[in-house]
Image (cartoon, rainbow, N blue to C red; front, side, top):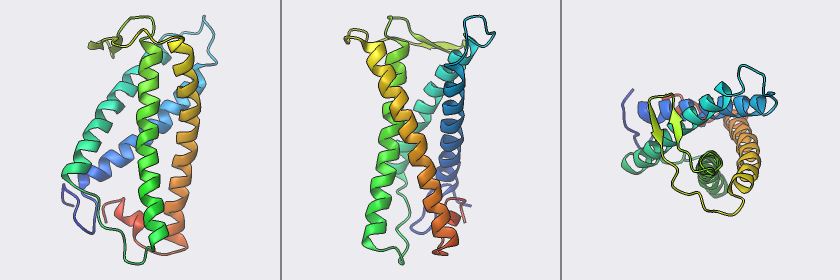
Length: 181
């Protein structure tokens, strides 16, 4: 498999980032869903959020690279059997996934830094708090984070179902291309 995308196939870098982001998003969602129910005396009360924030910031870095990579190595062309509505839906859907990911990550940053403290990343370094003066920053960002995360996960599931539909009903190569074939 080649590293870069070609006009007909995704390259290894795009395939790896796609699946890495997918697994990370669902893992972070599960961790976030679980940790909001922790009580103060749980041994995970501090560890869960620290892991959530650290992996969220790493995901942000991967997504920045993913945008850069998308510019440097454009996605393969649409399959010839895809009509104009399928092509439009694909572009809009992927755009919505990217926007949703960045909104979730930025709102998470705003929640975590609302008190003026930076975010330690696995105890190795700290991302500084730069925006701390928004009225009700933690509460507003918290609502955005919660609802956009739910929307993102639901939309990602629909994205997966669409890929399965292409594979099993349409019998085209959409899903196979995302496995690098």
